[in-house]
Length: 175
Image 1 (cartoon, rainbow, N blue to C red):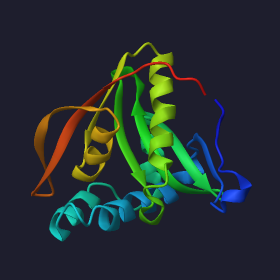
Image 2 (image 1 turned 90 degrees about the vertical axis):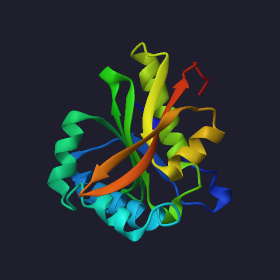
Image 3 (image 1 turned 180 degrees about the vertical axis):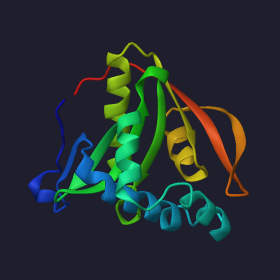
C-alpha cells in the first residue's frame, strides 16, 4: 500500500508521509497518544478525565506494538517519527482510534488518515464506517459529514467520559 502525501515544497510545512505502522513505531505511538489526550483534549475534558483516559494504555512501546497485531494501524510520520495514527478494525468496519500530536492538530493529518482508512474499508466491501469519538474529534467529524448515532458514557479507571458513536457512508473518491 502506498500512502505518501506531502505538502508542496513552497508551503514551508513539514513533509508528512503516510504508511502502515511498524514495530519500531510503538514508542512514538505511546507518546502521541499520551500527549493527544493530556494536552490536545484539555479544552474538552477535565484533568481527572484526561488522566483516567491516558492511564488506559501504558506509555510503553510493547503495548502499542501488540495493538498493531490486533488492528491495521495507519501512521503519519514527519522526519521518520510518528505524529499521528489511526487504528482500524477492518472486519468490523470500525475505526478504533485516531490521535495526532497536539501541536500538529488542525493541519489535515487526521483527515488524511481517515481518507486512507475509508479507502481501505471500501476495498474490503464496507459501505460505512463507525467510530466512538471523543468530544473533540466528534465536533470535527460532524462537520465532515459523519452522522451522530448517540452519546454514551464509558468509565475509565473509575472516571466517566462522554463519547459519541458516529457513522459515515463511504463512497469511492479519486486520489
